Length: 85
Image 1: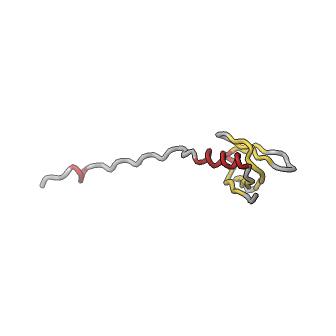
Image 2 (image 1 turned 45 degrees about the vertical axis):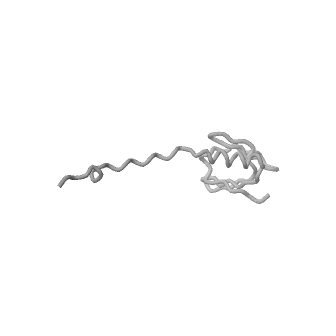
Image 3 (image 1 turned 180 degrees about the vertical axis):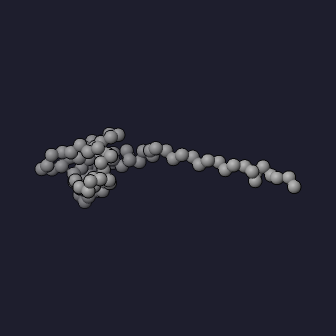
């Protein structure tokens, strides 16, 4: 019996997902433009609050009232949560 090529065809490898979808940039830009209050949970467990004044590929600046502003490396951030106005 002849075999079909489809039975012996190797499955196509799945495409590698992109490193970035640029959604992070869009989200941080919207938080910055609105001066939306946020709570940032750090990987060490500490939570800091303020609004994001500036960001780039590696870090962000958290502006806080009555306390020093912070420059936080993104690798130290567990998550960012929007706070109430």
